[in-house]
Image (cartoon, rainbow, N blue to C red; front, side, top):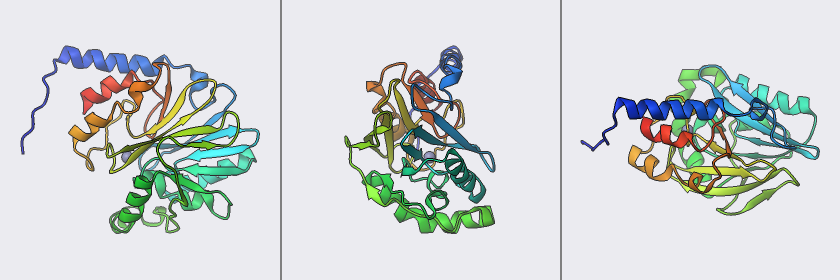
Length: 254
Ligand SMILES: [Zn+2]
């Protein structure tokens, strides 16, 4: 099936790429996996077989983790970092139903009294597709494919707030089909604007393009980023934190 692709000159593509690179480079290094305002943010990156990032948001009262990586090793390292910080894990948030975000949930919350939240669509897809993912991925990753995978224990709806005190309160946005069969976004209400947008933007990285048609991705990509301030810090699953300016590059890439 053919589809029309908007014409884009090499000059225009280059301009978008430069703008995107500048948007990433211009970010204050202290805001990248170090903290924003009074909420330190720890980034744990899975390096093998591919780089993907999970985030630990820290306040004096406790921690909230967003996403849980894929491999057994990386997700256990994420759990170890939670333990090393030494504060209670108050919740895990799952933004996305792809295995590189949920497969490590079991290791992350093992023996902890911490709920895992997702919007209903993410919860449905991750449960629906787990058996197929198991059949596909277990042979690829062997012992690094966690066998103790777990699923969200609670669902949260569009517009609701997960409130764990000042600096640790997240607004929920339910996106629907976008990069995956169901995406969501968690926006941290803090001194600085911070949003975890998962794989809605691949920060100067190759995008995963198999689940949802590009037309759907493009239609969804501005939601809800179009409403965000231009200096909002976007934490992503792949690559460096970005700002909404990177949306233009992502559109061009797709
Ligand atoms: Zn994804």
